[in-house]
Image (cartoon, rainbow, N blue to C red; front, side, top):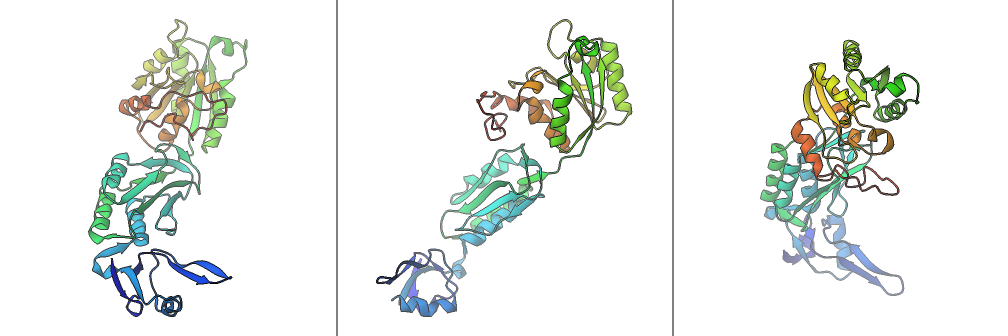
Length: 341
């Protein structure tokens, strides 16, 4: 910061507000802190009694807060992200489309370890909608050294995309509903309508639902039939507990699918199974998916639709934040459920 005559301040950054006082008419800032002085401002500054100013000179190797925030945001943003114009030194990042938000959390943490740099986001791996605000970034001072901005850009390149919205595949879904009580018509199927609604919200279509009793061979045959039809995702519902009559996990294993997990550290959703039959994901869904607005379904299925290969390690990480608080009015995803990352 330095003091210079007003006439020499063009192109420099004000370090303080400039107040204008007209008795009985106005009292307030005519120029705000951070304003870049232009030639047209000189007469106004002289009129309010300012012969000298405290300024930063960008030519001294410093970058204005607006430019710094823009450069940090550009370096971090991947596909599906829209950057807003700087407002009081802050740039907001929003979703250009609906999809799955993915944030490189280690990269985000690296940025925030830099003194005078801030970058905040909502939680990763949640479904977002077009126009939704996802994050914001700014530097703390009015100006920062060029070297600092270059370092943030380098981190952004190393972790690119640090933040992105991945599109969800408009998947064709097949469902196998197990349970003798449903198969024989003793009770009405409750899973199908719930899954159709959930998949419809995700832009997918349930094209076939097959009902079978609790026999392993019948469940295996139904899964393999759906696989031959080329569906992108197969859901198997019912029979997911350890009761002797619940044979769904055994049936999924009998298909020859590669089992990723049977069990997840989430409540609701502990009796969840994930497997892959070649490249086709198979999800074994416990009954809680019918009764809870947010469950293991909402934590895993969108990631599958975004093309991610979900691993056992991914499932384990759900434990921190995997307990639903059972709020009287569910506000998912604006809550802690599934947000351990």
